[in-house]
Every structure is written in C-alpha cells, then in structure tokens.
Image 1 (cartoon, rainbow, N blue to C red):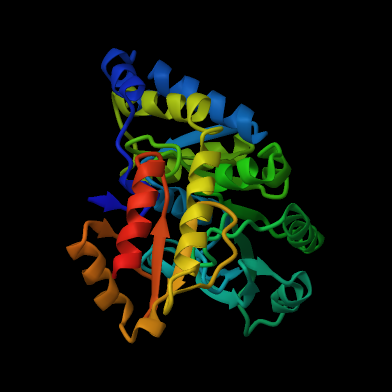
Image 2: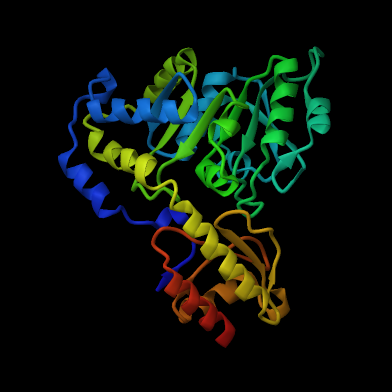
Length: 338
C-alpha cells in the first residue's frame, strides 16, 4: 500500500529508535529531563527565540499559545481556512473562551489592509483583538508557502496595534527548505511559533512552541493545566533531536516527489491539479471523472493507494519520508490505469 494520506504517517528512523532506547531521562515537570532540555535549547536556537517548550502535539501547541496570549472574551484574527480554525475542534473557544474572526486569504496569505480593518476599536460592544495567527506552510491552500514579505506586513500591522502574533508553523521547515532560506526569516515575524516534529521531519510524536523566556514560562503553566506535563519524556524527545538535526534538508526530496506526482496526474484526462505545488501537498479535482472525492479515494484504495478527501470533489496527496520515487512511479501508473 502506498500511503499518501499525510506526512503524519511516517515511521521513526532506525536512528530515532536507537536514540529512544538510549535516551537519558528525568522528570520533565521538574525540568530535570536532560534530553528534553537539549531538544528545547536546540529548537529555540534554530527558530531564533529565547526559549522553547516541548508539547505533545501541534494542536496542543497552538492551544497553549492562544491561552498564553489571550484573555477570555478576546477575539483572534486568522485566515479562514487555517488549521486552528478548521481542524482543532473549536478548542480555542472551548479552552481559552475566545472567538474567532476569519480573514479571506489567497494561498493562505491574508491581506494586511483587510486585516487591519478587522482589528477592533474601543467600542464596549466589541471584543478586544487579542491575537493574530498565521499558518505556514498553509495546509488547505495545498502546502502553500506564505511569503516572508506577507508575514512581515502582517506582523507590522500587529505591532502597530500592540497585538501579539502566533505562527502555526507545523510544516515551517518545508517552507524554509523550499525557499532555500533560514527558518529565522519566517519566525522573526511572530512572537510565538509552533513547529511539528511528527510530520515531514519524521519523529513519532511531539511539537514545540518557541518564544521569549517570559512567554514560554507562562506557556509551561498552561501545558500543566491542560495535563501536558510529562515525566521521563526524554524517550520521545530524543527522536525530535534527530528530526531537527538530520531530517530537515531531506524535505526537498518530498517536494520533488510531489512535483513529479502533480505533473503526472495533470496529464490524466478528468483529473486537475488545482494548487501550485510549493512543497509536499498535491490537491486534485476529480469531478472530471464524474466521481466524488470519496468515491475516487475508494477506487484508489482498492488499487493500493491511500489518499484523503479535501472537499466534495478534491483529493489530497501528501509526500513524505516513507514514500520512495519508485512508489511515486507506481502510483502514477495506477492512477493512469484508473
């Protein structure tokens, strides 16, 4: 089976498994797990922030960021198809007691002028704007890279109004590798950033939040409140160190495979690639086959390929560490045969 559902399905490398077995551990709630401390220091350095915090998932990292920045009753501004709004179960309203106000974006990029108009004033009838969130790369925009220029413009608007900015950077290393630039070019335009270790970087679990020491101190308490304080957690932090030191540059292979896949699919009658393939995600409209996305996915599954629905007629394919060039070739042969 060729699994193109998500880069979350990757299995840990042998180096990661060895690191897990040999990891030096301690009680992380007391900040005594040396492996976690090394991971957090490494992440903070790579992301250009003072401090970082190891959390169980990207969703937990985003929720902790919102809880840390906002007060109950605030409003959060974010792009209308962003992961925090679309895929996190309404958690920011359930946990932080905030409401969302979405901004229509183009390939994940919000217009800074429209964003500024959405910022609330001092009217007692309105909620205060407590946070602005960005996502890079943008999942529902097909792994699109939000440009440094757009991020900087959004950040400047936020600073003008003294509003903090959080970056959901679950796949941010994909953006940096694709643009062949330092990841700090993106992170300098956010007060906090969340990165996932368990997507393209291949670790089995975990994410990190990075920001100032003062923010991360508050975030650590929110992690505890959410039940995210773990004990001898070095065993799952150790693969994160491998992810950040050995698995970043190879993301370019996933991007290459995605482009090959998109080119091949684009040549099939009845299939249309509807996104610019910046990184490792390919979105395909299958309506020309007179099938729904779920019907087409069932056909793929019957023939050894896994993908996911991204709407009534759109199928998402995602390349990752466990997909080889030979599997991409085989997938295209199968898709052609259908």
